[in-house]
Image (tube, rainbow, N blue to C red; front, side, top):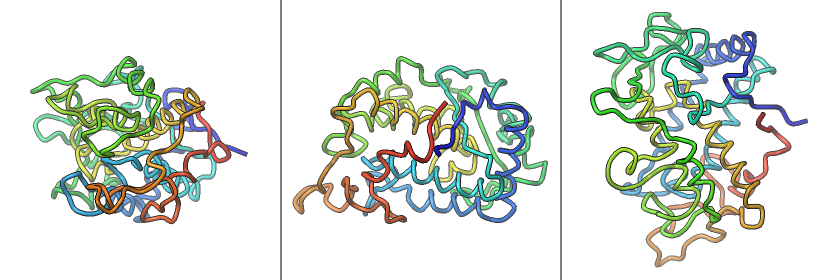
Length: 289
């Protein structure tokens, strides 16, 4: 029977406590930092060499779907009742309400070092030291809205613009795509701020601090954000049933710039043996409330 992922704002006090405690437990066991290391190692950009499985390519959505499932499995081995909630950043836009409360993720970082000093993941609590990162910082950081050069969270209109595209992805299958649902949701573009960063990417930028770059998993909001992104893939599939297939169906040929750089529908996504096709329908595993 499929379990349910709920809106974080709808969690009961007990569900909040269980979710936080399970995260802290897998951090203490050393399991959580394995997820951080994995995401860093697969944060490959257009300009880098090799396969782009996690970002800037078609497999962005199925890769993170599997990543979420692995994290959820780790949490459920601690507490079988726990599922990953989602944060609807088109509605819950306050910097002081859910999910930024002391019984969930804690609040914004302090000035001037952006250290998070409230909630269960604050460095001062002693339970959430940053051990894996792209910098040497030992504490969790946030910088909501980037006050020195302000940006806003994406809106429902921004999200709807991505959901309206009937095609999953298009050539050249990278961060420069101007058409296709995947990149409109992942959010790569040109220019500045709301033009350069849309939807998924803009949320990472808005939270700031640890949420910037490959080590963004260090902030537990990563999972709530990606659960909402994953939910949008499900919504898109339901809206475009006749055309809602992962693309490309076949890998680019030897003469194509993307040859060996992206994952086709029936190719395995490292580090797993699972294919994007196998990740297209997870209705038997979980659903969204």
